[in-house]
Image 1 (cartoon, rainbow, N blue to C red):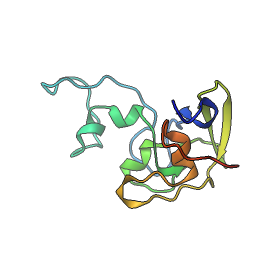
Image 2 (cartoon, rainbow, N blue to C red; image 1 turned 90 degrees about the vertical axis):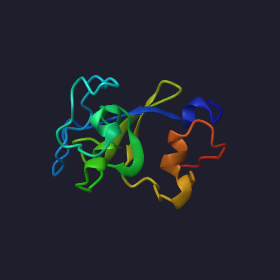
Image 3 (cartoon, rainbow, N blue to C red; image 1 turned 135 degrees about the vertical axis):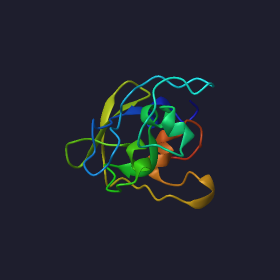
Image 4 (cartoon, rainbow, N blue to C red; image 1 turned 30 degrees about the vertical axis):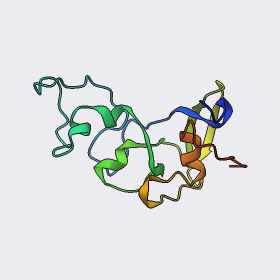
Length: 131
């Protein structure tokens, strides 16, 4: 982690169920094998990663914190059942509450350019100011 432990998110809070979404966020199940055996996600048709449980375990910054989108993909975002944000474990071991209003502008081309994305990156080299 070249960006510094205090500036790197290791894991974040995921609500048990986000109102308006079909899939339960944060559920943990076994990844299916290459024969297609193992548990499936009934609401994730056409999305191999979701169907295998990968998106249910890993979080994404794409939808921000406490996303309002009812898209199945928004289930991969960080969320909480309390208003205002969610709790995150930082690389230095502290738990920090991050506001759902944190800068999270998503640029095309996979460019890391927002505060939330920089906190989730381990080696983007960007200086993170107050957030």
